Length: 377
Ligand code: SAH
Ligand code: SF4
Image (cartoon, rainbow, N blue to C red; front, side, top):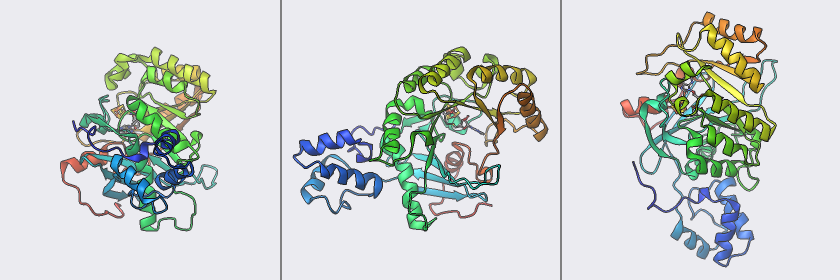
């Protein structure tokens, strides 16, 4: 495992209070704090030297303690449906990915203005779900808050360089889902720090309701998240509605079985007064039986939540399959008849392996070209 402890900190994990303490502690006026935060999060500076309206003395002080280490674009893949997948190289050479999912047309024909970035929280993942590419590669390390934040900033820098949507004055990304590589709640402190930077007016100013944390079911951390004041959205990766099925495909269930998970979800809902989403991947012959429909409907009613069904996206090296369209329809209709609000999400970017961890997995097998790939289709 790499050790980042000795390297200077990246300032893009500073919150407003820390920036204030730091700069006033050095004897600078408070307005310098606003300037610094503006350079970090609004103007997206990629070096301390670029912060041209800060006095040289302050820039030197900052450079003594901090260093901006922007993510380096290792690979970029565009899908026919407009999804763009980014593979980033971290300062220690590790690779992570983010997926940009552009606005789409809603069911009622209206144009949505939601431009989502799917963000990674760790390099690899320790939780070893049997269906997941991130699980397959094992755990390497947590991302620093700055590395979580810079995934969004880097996409904005990419957009500027490429002239994407250049008519739009506001930032490209206006919706964040922590559904990339890794288990966000296992990197709790850095996650909360990054979410604060996403959410704050001095940061990226993205509303808490536009930020979703997805978890495989870390019950104690769900309870901790329930105590934060922000109205972040919570998505649960359920993928099995009984302990027997969940135990088989998600080892985390042996630590926090369903009852413990569901009661943590209830606590979250009570604290926030907000609906939770349940995500359920449909894997052929594994979790698509009628007993799962029955059990899932009970859990969904208990949580009064919406269920998102996602046909499994096959992964190289994992012997699991996407079920037939008939099986998906039967599962959906079964839930619907039992009174559950259910949608089938057609995964975006399936032609570029947009499920988490897949691009990195492929890039580890054969070295990735450093240039953009353009249209993959
Ligand atoms: N660790 C967190 C967040 C990252 S995974 C979690 O598990 O929720 C984001 C989502 O992608 C999860 O719901 C995960 O189960 C799902 N996923 C993983 N591999 C997939 C695949 N091959 N096809 C479809 N969804 C997948
Ligand atoms: Fe980790 Fe989530 Fe993948 Fe499970 S589904 S291995 S928790 S990233």
